[in-house]
Length: 444
Ligand code: SAH
Ligand code: SF4
Ligand code: F3S
Image 1 (spheres, helix red, strand yellow):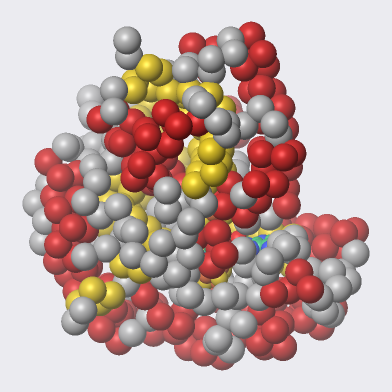
Image 2 (cartoon, protein in one colour; image 1 turned 180 degrees about the vertical axis):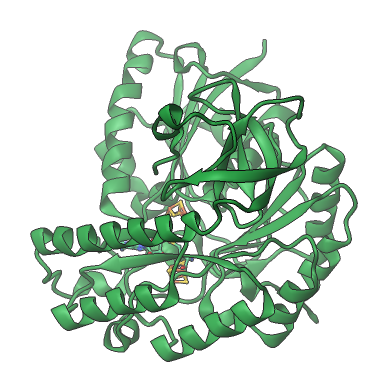
């Protein structure tokens, strides 16, 4: 009898890609996916550990899902991903209903691990130096966008970050395996490729670097657009900047995490760049790619962050002019270096700082989007808007969500849309009634 797997994914796009990898392994072992936990033989959560809040949410969810085991004792409950790797046996102790704890380097043998977990609680949290899963075929979700992990792990050890501890050492997939995945995704009908890695532009396979990869992928038939996330500011080379300028399919959007605008904080964070170097890179990127959109990640309330440091971040954000920003309150992560330091910015102060940045970024995003009104943008049609099936949604070249009335387009088409209105998070094509714009807004 076919077994059914219910899978929930938390965290970043790398986890989304890992979930597709796990589903590929499980399909080959005879599992089919179900959208209902109540129907499942195996319930699996692919988890994140980046901030404490992420783990709290998952504990809550595990509590809820435990009831399926109470009702149907044969059901297996598994925890995969970064929180599994972070907590290891502690997860089995804290949530006794869990049958399997499997870290990011244990997915190749997932079906066998599940079989073993039927007999006794199982732990598979050994990190690998060379596992890349490059030879495995992921079961990609339907859509226009294919996620392709090109490297795993991270060697940067930023002081606040748990990723190097839960994902292990940096390693890249062989270039030919990446290209095979791109070609395969193109043949399956995907129009856009997103290359993934924690420091994606540190990609290397012998003599080939991220620039070689972009150039080779740019030549693959069927693929219309290429994106990548997240590059590290210190890993951009001239070769990569030239590739960004030359490759027609590489889209004019770079997510460039800043974290802080204060050199004192950047140094303590071990980000290995100064704000001056970062801004010089921004200038070179903008020169290489006209009309480039930039987004970023910022942390407020890092240990020792003074009012002056915060103001430096605020100023830097103004000077750079981001199209969007993910803003986080610092969260100490046991294991990471800064967890040993006093978390001395009170939560109320973190809230005050993040609120200021949210408001200022909202206005900056609105200003930048308003500048597009009256222009034509190229949109890759992703599907009907969730809020109103008479509208399509998709992303423009600069990765802004765009909503427009459905005509006779199909999902996967590239269409030209005249922008009539804008909010901080969304562009609206002509013909979207103003009364519906607020409802359609893709507020994060
Ligand atoms: N590899 C990427 C970031 C991955 S984590 C990079 O180097 O930029 C995504 C974001 O989460 C980070 O950019 C950072 O802004 C945030 N983050 C990571 N650890 C955090 C922590 N301990 N507290 C708050 N935010 C954190
Ligand atoms: Fe974390 Fe820094 Fe690595 Fe990004 S580069 S994953 S922030 S350690
Ligand atoms: Fe979270 Fe792991 Fe990604 S900690 S952000 S899921 S790499």
